[in-house]
Amino acid sequence: MFCTGLFIKNKTFMRLKFYLILVIFITVNYSATAQDYFGYSNFGGITSAISNPSNIAASRYRVNLNLISTNFYIGTNMYQLQNKKFFSFNFNGLQEGTDYSKIDNGETKHFTANVDYLGPSVLFNINKKIAIGLTTRLRTMMNLDNLSNNSFNVFSNTNTNLYDHNFTENNVGYNVHSFADFGLVYAQQLYKTSQHDVKVGVTLKLVKGIAAGTIYINKVNVLNLKNADTITQVNGNFDVAYSKNAEGLLTGDMTAGFSQISSSDAGTDLAADLGVVYEYKNNKKYPYQFRVGLSVTDLSFASLTYKNGSQGGNYDINKANTSNILTSSVAQLPGESYTQYLQRLSSLSTPCFLTVVVQDSAKDFTMNLPTALHLNADIHIIKNYYVNAYFLFNLIETNKKGSNYYTSTYIVSPRFDKKWFSLFVPLSYNSLSEFNWGLGAKFGPLFIGSGSVFSNLLKNNVHNTDLKLSLSIPIFRSYKSTQE
Image (tube, rainbow, N blue to C red):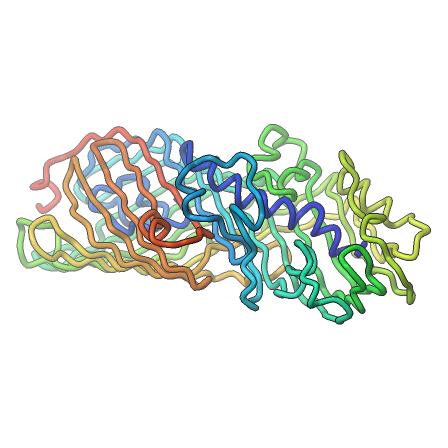
């Protein structure tokens, strides 16, 4: 298997390329609260409990029913699409070198994407101090980390300058996971005076796995790449594990497996979101002068376990010295499943073959939840104008087997915030060195926005994007009742 390289080239890298170019833009055309670029709002309702459960205590809502909220994010430093092609929304017949191109900047390559659906969810303010909520949520997350720039150039329209060179890949991780959770939210105003207000909250979640896959390259040595179709020698070791229904997920379809939830036999996990909020006020006309919130989300009690029918194992690649390995001879065939592909490579009599070290065709494997720390500060400027500063910090090791994560992100978002209309202008920077500038607006029950729309308009090429849509039914209570 260069075989690992080809395994990734033919079914992961190539699909990731088209996934980036097509799925970004297809998803923009329909509804898509994971990596939220818009910060806090006084009228966030039950959706604000996703980042900090204490947000719903003593809120402006008597009842808030979320019908659907969807958030989509994708970012990479592997490929970029021309600005004019992106905003034309015409993605037929895309040509590399004309419509999109590789990003050959010497940096280690990454790819991250997440789609987050907050389904029917509801918030009730029980009294002036206590609020409860129920949430339903579905997420799919994808992360590829630690791939060298040389490997990326070799296995995607090969850079001829790399011929007759040796290079090594270590600790390259590719993790995909779809999972759902059902949450019970409790929030309470713990302490209140005329100037100080402290709120606490917790969400207890039952998490159910849907489909998952992980590929981890421990070490691969590519020795003397002869040309685009021939490798002189390759050796290494890698691990693969995936649930029975994860074929589509591994090849870039982030909705794969939903119709076969029961077939994955994934376990359940208990998880929690914990949060606290402090508000300082010296003017009863406005909710506060400044506000600080701190929370930890997806704090897992145990990893999700996939069992019974899970596929995978540990493989050595071509230990013996060989010559003239044709990449076409070990490419994945049309219609061939990953299980069939690995079995065929293990039985090949050609110079390139896999040695099965451990065949884990029924062994359990685990997937971690994307635990994150959230710090949020909101300052009242004048009248209905606020400035929000938000920091999302990933707490998960980024290239570990079975791990998905949110990209650490810093956001500053000025906003105009009223009951029936709010306007957000977020500016953000993340750990992938992406700067984004966006726009979001709430019109009564409808929210729509993108944290990257303005920055993408200004760029010659686009390599990250996001979209958020939300529809809810609000039943407000009087502002005076929240200040008593």
